[in-house]
Structures are given as C-alpha cells and as structure tokens.
Length: 126
Image (tube, one colour):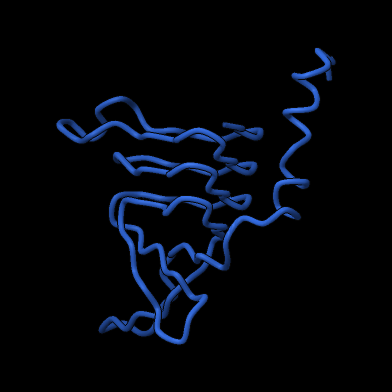
C-alpha cells in the first residue's frame, strides 16, 4: 500500500466499538486523504487526493447509467475522487460531501502510482 503525504487513518477502535480501518494490499491513498470509522479500502483501490471517507460517507459508483451507492467500503481496484451531492434543508440547498467511483484501476493508473515501488526496489532515498 502507498500512503501519500498527510494521509489520516482512524484509530483502531474509533469511535468506541467500531471495527478498525483496513487498507488492503496494493491500495494507493493520495495526499490529504482521511479514512476513519472502520472504512474498508479493498485491494488495489486508488483514492484521489483529498478524499474523505467515514462510515456514513456515500461512495457512489457513477460509471454506469444507474448509480450504485456503497458505505464503509471501497471496492477493489476502484478509482475514487472527492465529490458532493445536493441536499435540501429548511434553510436552503447545500452540497454535502461524498466520494465518486469514476473508474477502475488500469495500466495507466498503475504507472502513475508505481514510483513508490521503484524507489523501494532500488533502495533509493528521496
């Protein structure tokens, strides 16, 4: 897994009694991502910079004609970016945060996220 600068991962049991945050092998978390409240990031998923995931954050697959909403789990090899959804309240309409699955990891994505592996393979300091 690769954690870019400023990534925040929730505590082992935060909130009390929650399952731990799990980030599986090969996942890539971009700069300033936050993953808390027992969210599961499955194998080789990619979170774009600034993506914030909690147990209640809608993770919406927008790659087909009909959206599919996940909560608490990023499917394997998904490419996820921050997004917003409109919601109406008595005081007006507001954009609430969500995450958007915009595709699946490809060879091109692998090339963009492979720098960490190269540095480790050749024991290069940065």
